[in-house]
Each structure stands twice: as C-alpha cells, then as structure tokens.
Image (cartoon, rainbow, N blue to C red; front, side, top):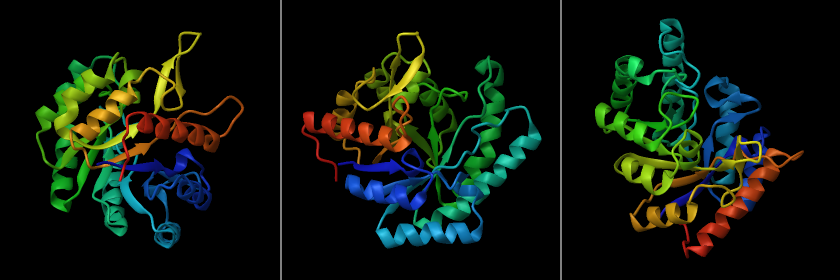
Length: 276
C-alpha cells in the first residue's frame, strides 16, 4: 500500500511551521522543495544542516529532492543547460544526506513545436541519465504544463524512448489535466503506469471564466477516487504527495493545504483505502 506525503512549501516557507502542520496531519513523509524562499538546492551548508536537523528531530522521512532541474531552462540555450546541470549535481549531493533516492527533473521550458525539438530533448537528457546511473539515484520526471512533457501520453512516449531504470515518473494527474489530457485517470495513468515511482496530487477544473483553477482534492475534474483505487489495486507502494497549489480566495497556502488534505482523506475513506 502507498504512503502519504506532503510537499513542505505547499504549507509554508517557514520550514519548522510546515513540519509542525504536516505532523498534525499525521503524515511522516515529506518532499523537500522550497524553504525560507530558497530551493533546497540553493541552501548553503549551514541552512542545509538546519533542515537535516529539523527533519531528524521530528522523525520525518524524505521521499524526493524537489529540485527545479530543467524546469525553466530553454532547450536551445547551452549556457542555461550547463547551469541546470550544476543544479542536478547539487541535487545528487544532497539526496544521500536525507537517505533519499529520488531527484526531481523536468523537460525544459515548453516550446510551441515539440516535434521540432524532440531529438534535442532526448540528446539533452542523455547526460542527466548517465549522471543518475553513475550516482545510483533515480531521476523522478514530473509531467507539467509549462514544460515540453505534460500529459500521460507525452510522458509514456519519453519513457519508452529513454528506457533507463534510473529515470522514472512522478505521475501528476492534476498537471496532466492542466496540460489538456481530458482523463488523466484512467487514460493517462494506464499509459505511464509501468514507470511510476512517485505520485503528486492536486485538483483542477475550468472556472466560470473558462480558465483552469486549482481546487482541493475531490473538488475538481480529476477522478481521484478511481486513481487512488487503481494505485491500491495495482500494488503501488510508493508515496502519494500532496502538492496542493490551491489557495482559497484571500487565504493562505496553509489553509489551502488543510482543505486539500481533508479532501484527500475523504476520498481515500470513500474507497476504503488506508495508506501505510
């Protein structure tokens, strides 16, 4: 059975407070992205030691180093690419400090014509995959609208082509819907299922203005009841991390995460699913 996790910066940039809230949720697994308005890869040694101490003192497990590797990187800019390789190097250095095997990566800033950049995308991913293989970590690839690979169909195509055991998928159904995939579950999920090593959850719908809006789990268009049941039935034993994104009007990220975690719990309970 899978375990629940929470992305700390979806609660607060105040790292200690975020950990206290997550412990209040009854969750003991976290994902490290931003704290104190810095990404984990940008922390200095003193700050990193503080994070490690707080994580250990509170008894949390770290499931993923949520770096920004290749998120905002133009695919045809060699200098930017080299800077992002340094981000990956830092991620790989940090991961073992937290007994973590997963390092997040993306697929470069979205281009208008993916086919025209497909070969370049594959070429640019060769070095990161070799680095992961050499270091014994896994690149956890997240599908997201702002990058070149956003849907389950696009993600499956990439995984089939890369074909490395050290590159696997962070399946994000909310991001897939946001990227134009009408049914992330079951359609996208069935395509990416062989490569899923981690899962992010957030909910989304078209609002009255016709724009995509983030919502608490269970309040949007993603079939999370079906998705969670499928994960359980298929024997997924990784982490399902709440990556909220939703913020209530005039509210805070913490309020949004509290609402979304309640929706997550309710959806799981309706399916009779009890995470580890």
